[in-house]
Every structure is written in C-alpha cells, then in structure tokens.
Length: 343
Image 1 (cartoon, one colour):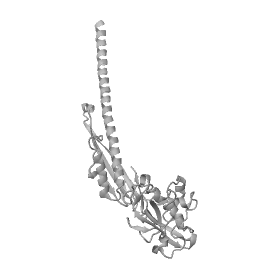
Image 2 (cartoon, rainbow, N blue to C red; image 1 turned 60 degrees about the horizontal axis):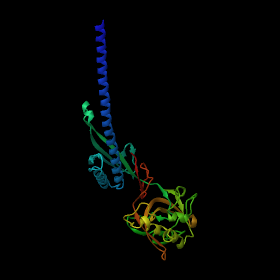
Image 3 (cartoon, rainbow, N blue to C red; image 1 turned 90 degrees about the horizontal axis):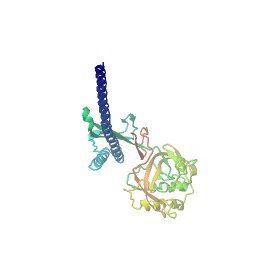
Image 4 (spheres, rainbow, N blue to C red; image 1 turned 45 degrees about the vertical axis):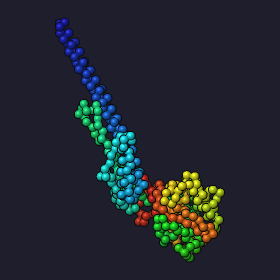
C-alpha cells in the first residue's frame, strides 16, 4: 500500500514538472513573440511616416508626374540612410499616378484632379521567434495625396476680365477696366463690392490679411456667382490698402519680416503680396449695378503700383491652398488648387 502511494505521488510530481516546463516554454515564447511583434510595430509605423513624408513631398510637385516621382523617391532615400531610423525602401513600381477622371482608392477624380500614391516597405528579421520557425516578415504602408481645383475663395475686391487669360509669370495691369483690356465697361475702374452679409469692410478685403475666420467665411465667393462693381474708389483708397498705410499695406507687409527675402519665383505661400482675384465675364448694367459672373480665379503676385497712372501690376502664379474637391466636376480649371492627403 505504501509503495502504491509513493508511486502515485511520483507520477503527480512528474506531471506537475511537465506542466511547469510547458508553462515556462509558453511564457518564454510569448515574451519572444512580444519582442518581435514590437519590432514589427515599429517597422510598420516607420513605413507610414516615410510614406506620408514622401506623399507630401510629391504633392508639392503635382500635377507633374515626373517631378512628383522624383520628389517622393528622393524623400524615401533621404530617410533610408544610416542614422535615420529603420531602413525603408520604395521602388518605382510602388508609385501610382492617376490623372483626371481616374480612380484611386475607390475615389473617382474630377476632370481637373490628379492623385499620387506611394507604398513603402521594410524587412523585419525576427530573433526569438526563429525558435518557432518564424524567420521574419515584411511591413508596408501607403500614402495617397490628391491635388484638386478650388471652387471658392475669400474675395479680393477687384476683378480681371476672363477674356484676357493670364500666363504664368506675365506681368499685367490688374486695373483692367481702366486700361485697353476692357474698354467700355462702365462702373469703377476694376473694383468689386463685398459680398452681401460680409462681416468686414471693403478696405480690409482688398488689404487681404489679418481677417478673422468669420470675415473669411462671409467673404467667400464661388465659381458662377454674380458679383457687382464698387464705384467711388479713388487712387488713394487702393494705394492705402496695397502700397502705403503706415506699415499695414500688402506691399509693405509682404516685403518685411519673414517675407523680406520673398521673390516672385520663391516666396512664402502666405505672403500678403499674393492676391486671389476673380476672373469674370461682364454681364451688363452700370454703376453699382454693373454685374459680373465669376468664371475662374487667378492668383497674382503683387508686383508694384504706379499711383500716378492708376496702375496695379501683378504677375500670374500657380497657387495651391486648402480646400480642393477631388471629385469636382468643373469643366474648366479654376487657377487655384488645393492638395490633400486622403489616406
């Protein structure tokens, strides 16, 4: 009897030992897996960070595919060098460029939108998990950006004829109603009234900076809107807003402080010298009833003002700002675009 009890105890002790060994193996395996899963999580986040950076770099070059590809691949390369973190790579085949009316990530683009998608990869070699036959894996993440037309902007209270299409870099006299471009159009010499319900004054809108969010929202105009002439504007009014107003005018602010080194070809995107102006078709009538329809928008670099001759000179620029609609069905491009990360 005593021998049977001893044998039973020995069996139980052996089973307990076996379970203990299995428990330690399971805990060790879990610990090993957690280390390797942690490495994988870091690699995945690294891929996403580099993809986002490369996508945003490409976005600055849209709609030009070759330039966008170059910018994206250069960004990936710069972030894959020694000392930059987990090595991440991307081949030309990992890039997708989609033009107008194409589809990407389930989104159908409008006739003036462009999209760019980049996928980055990195290899993850496991350590402890090799004991269980898991040698490693590959992490990857993507970023998709879209450049699309803007259908509305806060108004600058002047207009330019849609019949005179601007050419990038070309200098024009922006006071077209006072020059040969639009002879015979009655009303003011090229200025517009603020939209109905706008919370700020005409002068501040022409000055174009320091506006509150409410001012911007209530001064918003869209393609196809009717806008009306503003009469009674003399040279002193627009010169104060644009050229000289105790250090507060567009030209003065746009050539000082952070903007001191800005030029037409190399400038901050928020420089006050950038004027977003409606390009319009004259519909008829006179005075404050002179009506215009907004056909598109133009971004102009305010070059100079000739007060004596009632001239405002600007250069047309291509300009990107927030707020584009990638699915916009506009039949004409607006002249002002927005870039957005959609994934």
